[in-house]
Image (cartoon, rainbow, N blue to C red; front, side, top):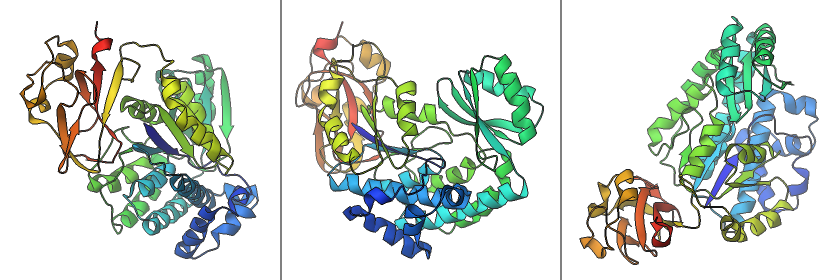
Length: 418
């Protein structure tokens, strides 16, 4: 199962578009330029870092660059079963999922960048990464600072970003070192992003969000705010508004992707920082970064090697999928409905079931599924299990729109039972 992730502000690099100029996907930059009413290709090819560091430019450049990479990956025939984006990257994920059009996504990113820049100019702030500290201790350091400073990103185990005024950051980092932080890395930004100091930007952005049409995502998207999947299009304006003033729960988002069966998480866009976080937050999941055209071959090699790689993981209890675990995938795109005789079963009861193999729709709660038994429908298409085993849990919920190839059920095979 593939999941796509998209980077946020800070991943941009001067000249990052140059390797893509001769690639067919470069046309995406031209389309975005027409929508934005400015030459974004110059921003991606010629702008110095001083220009790219400005919040408004950094966000727009990273967003467009990630969409160029996404288009190149889609041309290979690869589609994700789920998406997530770090801060700004959430907008890229929503465009990738079909929840936002390119035009609406571009206009929102422009408004977001301008609003955040204005808020930062009115009330300057900064950010710092704390390395080697637990989440609770980072929160305690901020509280003990008795100043305007908060946790802004839960990136990975032992990696937390704090955000606030310069005085608040200075006080909090001192307490963080006392609580065990091994290193403090200042982040060169001018705003206290993902904190209450962005409230003016949130108010401005919310007005713009109300003018945009959101669609039900064709691919599930994990939200920064609560690390949950939201299939109701009406949820997203509020989530994107709240995101400006609340922490990015990135570690929890990676865990959510892993819990849905992701075996390969692909970062699309400049940088590669998110791929390192995959290794720390979900070590049983493989991560790969696509930033330049040469990375496309690396991605295809990784995709072709997923099965062999997964087979090397030792089996143990948990939500990940191992050699004794299998997923049933959707044979079509559409709305998923679990089979009536299975819909009410609880995961714990199923996991502990020991009854003899059932057959077809006559299977009783707690019984094994036989090869070919129906587990649900997607539209008018039956979803049948190709494995014999116990249904451990659903990976899609009733009424969720799923894509062809997306996992919908987790099966513990007969060989995997104790």
